[in-house]
Image 1: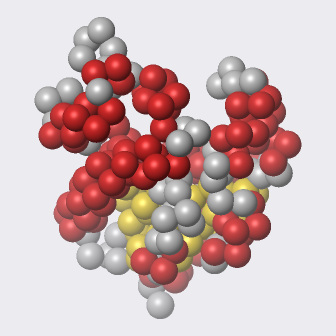
Image 2: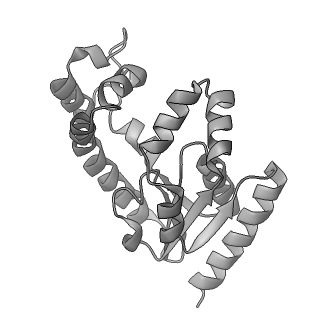
Length: 199
């Protein structure tokens, strides 16, 4: 088994790369999806979030209101740390379960937005970083996600710097081009991972 950590800044296109690797045959463990799963209605994760932050982080249906929660934790490092203490251990447990169920010869890609920030780079055989210039991140966040420029820059500033992510990378996927460019690059990277697994 080859264990790959995949990361990239917000708006870099990490999700697109994850989907392409999935299509190519990797076993994908997506921390973003698991972070949603562990706080779904009825989970102990959601109960703990509500116990920590109050019922104001729930929507009318009793599900987690992610925007309301983001407003509470985004500019408050202590609040964000409390949220991460609820979510991260549960995500890691689920990720370990998925990996354990994979074939011994699989390429298992853990897509982790905060891989560098949480000091996890050394847990993987290979670290792949999806990279774009900051201005392109801003452009995508304002154009595709409807953020203001200030909000986009604030989100980017809350993550590791581009330089910090690149310093942790074994492989860099440049996603500043077209969708076809990205598909070509990811296909190359997957072939390299297959070769490395076969060593």
